[in-house]
Structure formats: structure tokens, C-alpha cells
Length: 215
Image: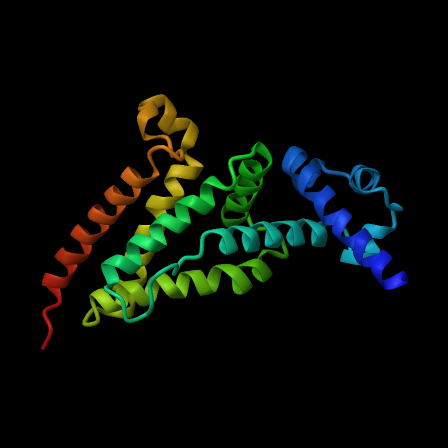
């Protein structure tokens, strides 16, 4: 019974952490607010997670895992599939994960995750190695399949450029809405944005391919 109670408390803390961190961010969120919403003792966060920062990382990891489960980067394709099809699936899932489930809470958690890429907290390395590194490696494998003759540096640059285009539609959403509201990433235009990023990326990769003819 004690184990079940502890498990329930931990789950409530995680759910409360989602709400409080989404609303206030890491710096302004308080352990007291989280524990109040979870109906737990103020010492529970430290007991179950090792502190506020560790709970914050657990919340972001939970967010990533949920989105990966909803929109996997390799849905319907295999390593032997056409790399263009693999890249399209990758882009589609990436942008769907960026949109989240459409709730304000999910959108704010997504922004917090992106902020970790720009200004990482001390525990961000855990998130990157567990969740981001495999995603990065998958994209690198797709690009390498397209231009196997290119150097690793070129392949990594291509992969980074592709990710950069995807991240732009999330991080620069406010600026994009001011320049051209039709370009703002939303469920209704995601297919058009995917197609554009795909065509733009394939065009660049094709030009690089011609610079590195196979021998």
C-alpha cells in the first residue's frame, strides 16, 4: 500500500509540475505551489525527484516522451525506405510534436523545451542524450543515405540546417505572424510547411550531391 501511495504522489507531483512550470517557468515556479496542487507535503518534491530542478527535467522528459509516442519520427517507414519518404515523415512528426496537443499548457511546455536548447539548465544534458541524440542520429542517417559520398561535416551541416528550418517556425512564431500570418505553424497548414521544408532541403542536398560525385 505504501508503494502505491508513493507512486500516486509522484504522478500527482509530475502532473502539478506540468501546470506550474508551464505557467511560471523554472525560475518563478515554487515547490509550495506544486505541492499544494498535488496535495502533497512540501518535502515530497525533494523525496521523489531530488529537488525542483530535477522535477522540471522530469516534466520536460515526460512531455517529450508523450509527443514521441503520439508522433514517432519513423512512423510507417524503415531504414530501407526511400530517404525522401523518411525525411518527409521526420519533418511531419517534428512539426506535429512542436504543435503539441493544441492546449496552451502543451504549447508553453514546448517553448520551455526549446529554451533549454538555447539556454540549457545544468541537467539538460540528460534530456539531450536520452531523447535528442537518437532523434539527431536518425536525421543524420537519413541525410547520409542521400549523400553517402559527402564528409561527416557536410552531413552534419545539412542535418543542422534542416532542424533549423523546423525550429524557426516554433521559436520565431510571433515574428512570423507579424511578417506574414499565413506562415504561422498551425494544424491547418502543417502539410504545406512540411512540403516546403522538404523541397527546399532536397534542393540544397541535390546541389551538394553534385559537388561530391561518387567515385
